[in-house]
Length: 412
Image (cartoon, rainbow, N blue to C red; front, side, top):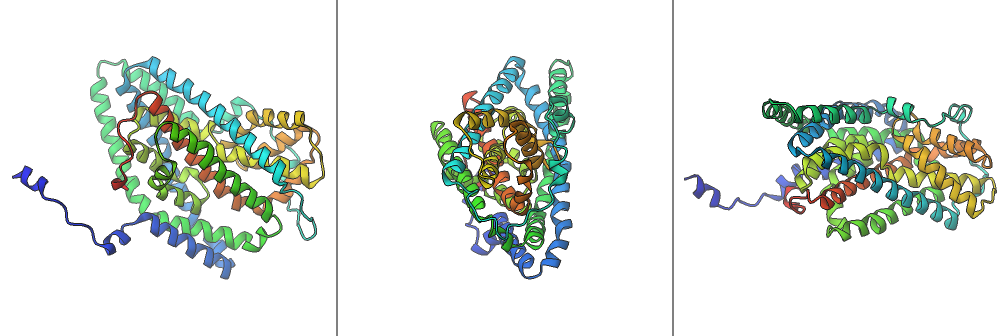
């Protein structure tokens, strides 16, 4: 009887049902509503900050347990510790190569399009003293201590190795699988609040800074978005094409996560959901668990593009001519300092301040001009970061033959 039931085709879902259950549509509608509220009722929009931040904070609660459970289960089921090490090293090498491409692309686009050649009349410098007076020097210890994701990653790696060598491994793994299913079930319920979080985040951004604040620095904003798009469709697209995956298909597959990031300006808000999507797509749990959390600390493609463009923008603003050797040194410095952008409050400005201080030629005070539009560029950074980490996971999974099946668009 069961077999007969399974053979009966399901009735097609009605249009109204698909609209009602379409998370991407709900989030997009919420973002548009947030823009309208922030523009026409700015005071109300600013008050919506608590909603946007509240949603992101709730999602952050899930990040540590999901990373821990995914990595421990992945290592325990893999059973080959040499493979774990190989995946880790391969990931770090990939991250360094791709982020260097991102830094170089950002520098070249800014050099040729020259977004800093603008009239300073009417351009207000905001207070950036908290970043410019005492820029923090990058240190690996400080990076680790301020980065919860990285700390959980290390603890999970150690726990996974220990559990894989215990005689009661199967029993422990079974319990952890039950816990993982429970956590993801709760997360699924929480994600129904994503439209509310996106509304709050967008209403606050527009209400606080105003769409009019984009006009003086509009050229820089446009250049940043153009560069991010070039990086996604040309560089990441070429990488995916080599592994026989369409970048457009992948972007469609994670459209809900991209819209959540757009609304909240935080790639962390979509981290747990992205990990779940990549597993459903076909990447093994072990690869997802190792690559995604590590990528959130070391594979910040969007942030890398923004940092190199911001340095060149400030140089152009102050009419500072840079030689080819000096631009190469900027890339070299950012290859190190950009790695600290994940774990520091006000990360982008602190990293930029540290970089400009090291260069000794570009005025650090130029950061003040970026404060007005930084919020609107953070969406582009976060979206590019999450796409980059998704692509990295696919690449490592494919290269390790840990990719089970292609994208099943019916799941989305």
